Length: 362
Image 1 (cartoon, helix red, strand yellow):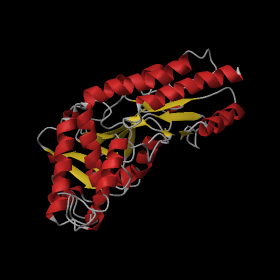
Image 2 (cartoon, rainbow, N blue to C red):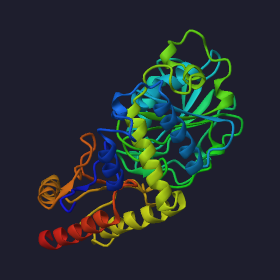
Image 3 (spheres, rainbow, N blue to C red):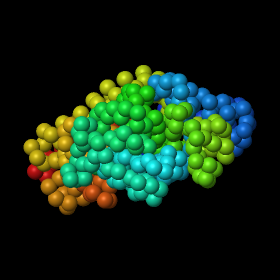
């Protein structure tokens, strides 16, 4: 399939070609049952097998220890912004947040609707171009939880390591870098991620939740917004996004075939190094605004000397088969999202295009 675009979209994002081909093969009839997976009951043994297998694959690949639930929910990570304080922000407690960019800011605003919210650390003074030093995170020992966004998709800043929160539950939105590298899951009480960047298509949100977080949840929360209900029903309380879960299943199998997260991290670092090198070795033609110690391995943001030249870059990149390089509308500039499924060859092609564009426009 030589006509595949160089897809650098931020989300929905690139999927592995092998996954798409397998899905195409099984689209009309799934494993000889005479129907598509989109047509069968979510109570059927066929779908329950997909549901259970996908949970187990995620536990295996991500190293999720015993004592955690894996849930497949709907509503995207944005719904989690509200579900988290609804379930865990009790009377007399506060919620602590690390403010690192646009997505962390959205999570804070939702939490403020439900109770006292404290900013434990912020990089707003640095225009969110760096992750706060872990030593500067002030953790209230009585906080209901500390929430952070592991990777800011819009600004392009990423946590390189995570704080030790002691007895305070640590919750992370990992929507844009989950499974891009090994992580010590036992450090977290909850990890969640919309699927549409590294896990599969949009439509399903993965929630990894420690069992002790499910104890004594408030009874006045709407049923569909209660984690304990979804855990008790193995993510089958209502009709799940069956096809999206199936696609996550295929992506997880693809990750396993690549050699797992250690191998993927090595590949991802080589991919992003190509583009960061094109920026750093350009003599100032390209500018990477994010502090080098906070640079994202998933979302590379950069600028040119003026907006007109950036518009020219986007136009010519599209003419050369590149997709998704225009920066988010809220910050402008340029952005290349290099998720797991973006091939090394695409990153090499972009780096080469950047060098050529510089030569023609310097």
